[in-house]
Amino acid sequence: MTATPILEMRGIDKSFGPVQVLRQVDFTANAGEVTALVGDNGAGKSTLVKCVGGIYPIDSGDYLFDGKPVTVHSPRDASSLGVEIVYQDLALCENLDIVQNMFLGRERTRGIVLDEPTMEKMASETLDRLSVRTVKSIRQLVASLSGGQRQTVAIAKAVLWNSKVVILDEPTAALGVAQTAQVLELVRQLADNGLAVVLISHNMNDVFAVADQIACLYLGRMAAQVKATDVTYSQVVELITAGRSGDLGLQAAAVAAAGNGNGSHDAGVTDLGDMNGAQ
Amino acid sequence: MTSTVADQTAEQSEPAPPARPGWPRRLLRAVGVQNISLVIALAVLVAIIGAQNSKFFLVTNIETIGTAVTVVGLLAVVQTVVMLLGGLDISVGSAAGLASVVSAMVFMSTHSAAIGILVALVTGVATGVFNGLVIVYGRVNAVIATLATYAGFRGLANLISNGRAQGYTGTDSTFVFLARGSIAGIPTLIWILVILALAVHLMLRYTDIGRNIYAMGGNATAARLAGINLNRYVVGCYIAAGLVAAVAGVLLTARTGSGQPTSGSQGLELQAITAAALGGVAMQGGKGTITGTILAVVLLGVLQNGLTILNVNSFWQDIAQGFLLVVAVIIQQRRRGLRAVGLP
Ligand SMILES: Nc1ncnc2c1ncn2[C@@H]1O[C@H](COP(=O)(O)OP(=O)(O)OP(=O)(O)O)[C@@H](O)[C@H]1O
Ligand SMILES: [Mg+2]
Image 1 (tube, each protein chain N blue to C red):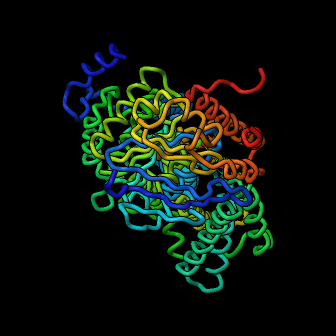
Image 2: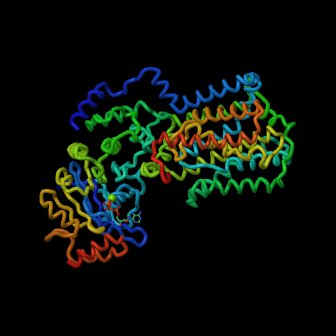
Image 3: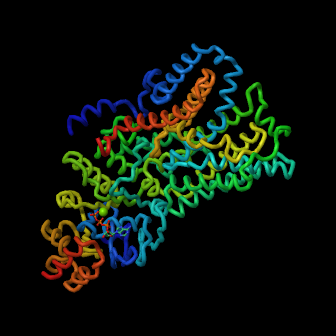
């Protein structure tokens, strides 16, 4: 815990036009740990992750990598730091094969010609390292893979680059029981290999199964980031739905402010905020 | 899960490089089912036409087919690239007509074929830049944008030429060489098509540019997240389309001996799109090859030549063309395995 976090976001603000999606968000991820990022639909999890990944520019706040402030303006900036993201919708090209997807946008070339043998070798080494045995051929089209296999390919794509931080946005959302277990095992393995893993999930069983830390977003604010062993299941659910739980989380005033301040959010979220603010 | 992992491990147990299947499978995979079907269709067509009229097999007739398909072939090749990206360029025929008049008019006033051709090519690039910028920065759907410039470029060509054929290039050695010359016994026109097709094929197959084009057509969001500059690719592809359309326009001028605002270029966009679709290029992007497109271009050329040789009314050729485009797209949709939308 005393070591500097590999990734630290401090006081992040992010608005889309009049809608402020993130307010003063602090977030850290440590090497060798799984940090779960939880929160209700529309809480801003994906947005936070896209700010980390350089898809969205942050309005204000600090982005520290390995303790040093950095500026990240594009996905390329993020990957050159060693930050890789597996997006919620996976971002794979179904018309390309596994190797082609793993090297998308970062193809190896010899001169001007693609270096297929090297890419094949690196791809299969990475899949082996992750003990992935469920794909028959690395030249298979992604269109022919199952949901779990696609998830695996997306994760392999993220760890191919000797990355230091891997962020997974709801990797198990569309998976069956067996494939979920497989992906979670992979997540744990990445952290045990020394990577900082950030896992976004709505499933508390998954979160408690693998997470070392839990960070909870509530209507664009970071309600709390705590050790998984320090909280109970119901406390986390309370943090997600109400923004606070006992002395954990946002203070009553902040909760109310979060609820009201997001008046321009979509109706469902606003209702939830108002309801909780009134309690 | 345990059982699947077990038998898949068994299949995976050979070392990393994937197992080499036997040569028939490898050949089939390299050539592709789509291309095999095209080759078979071509063979059947040749057999039918040849059986009716043996003049079909004369070397001169084969050369006629070759030179006749060049202009369409060039446009089909570049249309393939645009379609792989997920776009469509309806304006190529009009751009070719514009380049045709420009090349002839500049040639007439400068008496230099080189300058005429150069200005025509620059005009072609400008049409491509315009298309690309409208699509990217105007956020206009590619079909709408190029449908608009289809009319616009044609209007411009008619405007500067007063709607009439321009100049006479039939005595200039450069234009004559382009239209009727040959290198190593093969007509210049065919060389131009072969070189362009080969260059684009290699680019698509063996460079990261080609890979990114396929990626964009397959999933534009994924491509953007992978850090690919989509705008640059879109504008680049439309510029390539404009440039190749201009080459086609120059060749039209060379073949007819004068700059033609619409005659000869009208309908080329439909033929190019038909060839690409028939060659297996997916209308929604990301799938298709130059090999398939070229096979389809030859198939269409043979069909047209055969119908002419057999004295079929030329209006039937238009009907056949439209019919083939629909059939090609129906086959594509079937093979995608999509369920039908709407009635019935
Ligand atoms: N590009 C955008 N433009 C405008 N508003 C956006 C944009 N992206 C996200 N939002 C808004 O920001 C809020 C947070 O969205 P985000 O996708 O980060 O939520 P999330 O926590 O990932 O939710 P989920 O669990 O459903 O994935 C939502 O209210 C959403 O409508
Ligand atoms: Mg999300």
